[in-house]
Image (cartoon, rainbow over all chains, first blue to last red; front, side, top):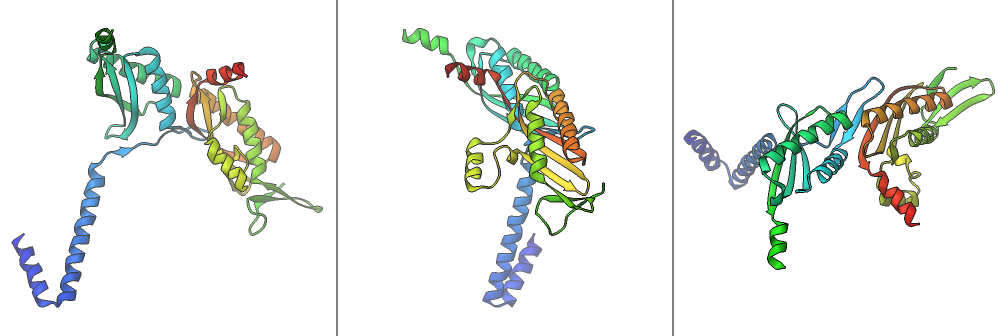
Amino acid sequence: MNYIYQLRDGLIQDCGPFRAGFFSATILLLLLVILWYLFHLISRKRVREIIIPGNRGALVVSASAVADMVRAVVSKKFNCITIKKIILWRGNRGTIMEIQGVYDIDGGRLPEVANEMREAILNNLDGQLGIKAIKEVIPNIKKITADNLNAGKFK
Amino acid sequence: MKKTKKKGGIPGAISAEGNELGLIHIHENVIAAAVRKATCKVDGVIRLAGSAIVNNIAELIGNKAIGDRSIAVNIDGATVSIDVKVNIAYGAHVPTVASNVQSAVVGEVEKITGMTVTAVNVVVQELDDNDEDISSEEED
């Protein structure tokens, strides 16, 4: 590291002000490129569609259609969960589905409800859409509400 | 009947060397119309996908007819590959509906144009509830 500083200082001292500025700008640009590359390497990649290849052409299911199905399943079977956002990510083992939502405390024990919901979603994805690429469903509860408790309080 | 893609002629059209009377040009809009007709007939398909606002604006500008924006036709000589975006009814088995769409489109396009359909890619854009249409009809 000291060597780099010495090299840079040497270069800047040897050059005129224009060249010194040019070298500084180049180093700054290189740093920005490295940061940008690292950001893309670390950040999760969104999945916009799931492609199922077939003999006569592919079946492409958009993330929006997957979200529609999940919303329908959850609203029918799990009244205690209100979905706010569904995101599909590309993971190492396959596609990951993150479900952000609000949980009503009257729904029962959250881990059990989450497991049931996970199972119902994966079954429907395979059964109705023919999607096996989604390997993981992660419920992400952003908020917990207690509608009945609040209703009783304000009566 | 040998068919070749016309170069430098009518854009989006293919030429067919029919007989000594002349050439037959088939525009991609003809194929798109056949695809639209075949797709909308399949059980489980609610409508072709696409934003109504965008389609209306596009139609006002005169770009393409409503629905055709959901269909992409790629002509390569005597073969054609088609991408079609659809909204499917919630509850329908999507792979079955997609397979039916592929069969219907292949049958219709090959019957009308005589071209070979190499692939029909079905893009399921959204899942819609049939109930919405029924309730709106009842209100009317």
